[in-house]
Length: 273
Image (tube, rainbow, N blue to C red; front, side, top):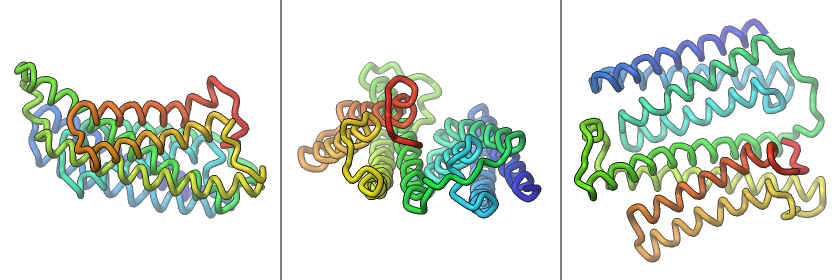
């Protein structure tokens, strides 16, 4: 347990330093600050991968049955999505926007992991279910990044059309870069989400011997795939671009967010996790 606390502390510190330099970039627009922030982000990501593995070994099961484990997996998934985007197309503003969220989630994971007792073994947490949850986390995190880039595209295009360009918006990438990066994130999120749903369907047939589409969480998850599938169809078949396509990205994300979080708060579901 001491090793876990040490690792999760170092992870939170690494993300805090990354966040510090991302804020400094936002103030000065000095790309050196963004590079330093990116290095600390990558270092924190590696530490977090070790932390997740170590916690898996400590608990004897996937760390998705406790609040600390869930927060740890979410911040890890979001960090992976941000790093993937930096490798694909370095956009310093994205690091400035999302690194604070990664730090905040990792800090909450640190608090939950430090001051809570390890959860008892859950017989429902099979290997298949663990990967179902993890792939869903990865899909949601990439959808989150895609949503953020789509919002940036929406703002940039709106200012260009109205010819009311703000001084800070000059730091935003060109519309083509934002458009391509949005597709990159949504495509990865779509694949991860689909893999998670596939594994979840296998678990559902093993437990319920059917796929209960009357469950709002399961129905919402498949509707998210449908919306993003429609987005790719309009884009690649009918060549739809601009704000209309970004509207679909945002609609898909809000549905994914409600399915991911809101269903358990506002509706009834037999979905355990």
